[in-house]
Image (cartoon, rainbow over all chains, first blue to last red; front, side):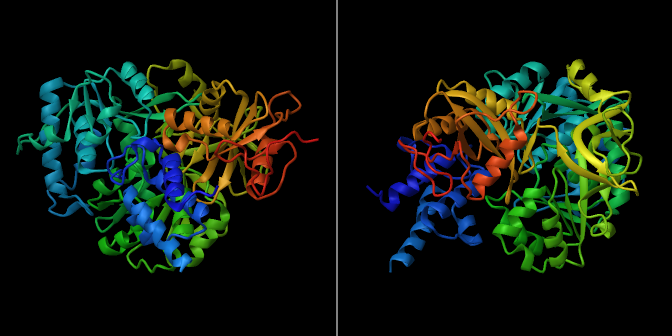
Length: 83
Length: 519
């Protein structure tokens, strides 16, 4: 069965950043999570773009500095598509 | 002369900014006195001749600890912040650090009982107005930079005060930097090319903007806001800027030049950059930690005429490309780049065997393959397959292969480099499974890599092979594997290979097909 967008973002994020699903929270951030570096961030951007068929612009890439903001940015694209 | 005294020789009284932002600022004068205060602390507490670890991102803290360690007659040991815990433990056992300058966020990487000098310790240090002078011999070791060797273990490159002064002078002679120059420092100071930018700009009284943002794209507004005159990057720096940001359409009026080192920038990107910025200079550098950073340079005036070339030796340095018979190659023939000059390392720390393999008859053997044209310009042609360069970092295939081979479901692994639009090169693991692979094996391999390797060493993709192709000497045919991986990446199907996706089953990707027995 097709997974919902929430689960898909979570799966991509956990896989790329190396977070266990059970440890996931909106507060996990670039500044505090040691494994999340600028290279991982680029990988995350590419994986999200591929998974959702979206293109993220520079401001959005910079904005996604914690998991909560990652979701918000991705969902803002989905809502536009679904309108 | 102590290298740090050389750096401050003409600029210690200046009230101009050395660090100009975005988050930290300090003038040349204040930096001089703060370095003296910390050098006094190191000198009084430990005396000279000890090894002091610096594990920090580009920051004022890094700058002070690094300079004060050398100024106090101690040895600054630089290790990349992405270092894996077990490797850092090995380095610690080897170096027996007297003091560890480690930023708070990297503290968890350290073992028990390491003597830490923290950011808080630095903040509580009393100021001084008395210069601290430590007698140092020019040929004393000033720093040890840890870099990846051919088997993945870290090797410490020992450089003397004289090496650092000589290489800085050579860079300044070709770059003609002045006090008006302000570099956008995007590369980590923990490796030679990155930290050489700190050296040269300090020596001339110039300044730095320390880029530490989540995304490289913010260098564009930073260059504009702070009036940077130069940016120093590796190929992936420019590839990311080109592909993911409005770099090419930005005016960047203050920017006078760009430099690219730390890997081979493809000709198509050189053309793209020079066409977008016809009035700015693009310097192509070639370097090695073992030769104190920069070895050769291509004059920007020749960037089109000699496109793809690494240029010629820096002042005082000569490059010779030698064939298998040990003689210089004729124009057009391929050989190994060797380096002669005054900045070859003292050796690898506590590793005479590896030193003897790399330095022979006063020559550095780089392992890089190249040709030379009639005018003596050197053209990079590839490397022996001991190192992959991804986003400026060195990945040793064998280290990743050994790790993946520990998985019970894996029969054999070969890690190969493929060109990557953003990273320069990317590592792909070609894995021959014990039996027909399921997607779970892919997930387990990636999980293993993510848990054990620094992020840049984790393969970008795993490809399953039914059998490894062999060459004439019955070794894995890496040339063939690179072709296969490139074809799969381009969307072609290749018989006998499959690209798994994560999940409980192997999904047939639209390009490579599922992993099923192929006839």
